[in-house]
Structure formats: C-alpha cells, structure tokens
Image 1 (cartoon, rainbow, N blue to C red):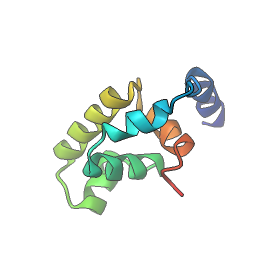
Image 2 (cartoon, rainbow, N blue to C red):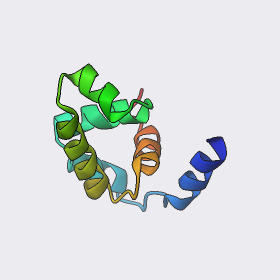
Image 3 (tube, one colour):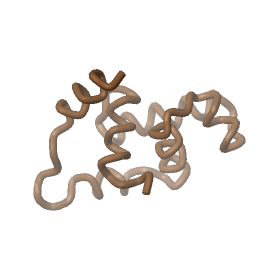
Length: 89
C-alpha cells in the first residue's frame, strides 16, 4: 500500500507558481470537501455515507465529481491531493 501511495504521489505534479492547489479546491462544494476529507482518511463510500448521512449513490456521485474537478484518476490521487493541500489538519 505504501509503495502504491508513493508511486501515485510521484505522479502528481507539484503546484506551479500561482496556487494551482487553491484554484482546484475552490471548484469543490462544501459537501464535496467533506467527502474528500473522509475519503483521504481512508473511509469507503459506505463509511462516508454513514458518517455524512447520505445515500451511497450520492457519495459515489460526489466522489466522481471530486475526481473530475481535481483532475485525479482515482481515489488514491484524490487522497494524496487532500493531504498535500492540508485538508486534514
């Protein structure tokens, strides 16, 4: 798992000057940020739906939109992005 995370981290490009991270985050709704935080903590769609009291299909929709808006190919990249952006504190 660690090797996979490091590989994905290397694939992410560092932010260019001008704050690409912030611009990408601004595209997300408040609820999408909530979902991203929980995704980055390793929760499954079921876990996220239970925590946020949403249907699992709604969570899947949020995850799909997050991946699209952040230009991430998968959940691992989105989680790494959240960590790099400091969303987890």
